Image (cartoon, rainbow, N blue to C red; front, side, top):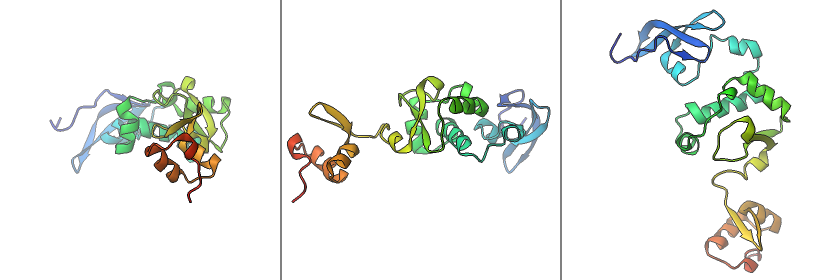
Amino acid sequence: MNKQIKDMKGLTFGKLKVINLSHTEKGKAYWLCECECGNAKIVNGRSLRTNKTKSCGCIQRKHGEWNTRLYSIWNGMIRRCHTSKSKKYTKNYKDKGIKVCDEWRDFLKFKEWAINNGYKDNLSIERIDINEDYCPSNCKWIPINEQQLNQSHTRFIEIDGVKKPLTVWAKEKGIHHNTLRYRVNKGWKAEDLFKKPQ
């Protein structure tokens, strides 16, 4: 075994168990794997480690939904929490330890939960507590525009004991959100915040 290639023999990734090193190409290792369904498949080591390839293709053939919106939502969760190298996703998900629960690593189990809990094509998945994982007890389906209000960067302000996102206050009072944000940052009094600019 080449010292620069990490031995993955015997490891399991999704439904694939690594049998042996197949070959190397341009410095990349390709592994012979056996799928739970009995098929063999040669897979790039990186694709295994990043969860990009999880079966010989039988998962897609089984549920036939890899091009559906629900599958895209599921795949997005996996990518944000486990495989993406984007600084944005790393900061907001990986670095905070946010994961997709073990049960939902299986798309069909996620689909079952989604259908039984009100999924519709105009809804988006929402974590109830944005500091906790994607799992049945911490997720629900809500309109997409509402989801945007429950993000870590959403600015909330409290006026007369009522707390709402700054953008909601601006819309309700008919003032541009940038104008309201400027006034809040400058410490304007609550009674002056919504006065129309002269």
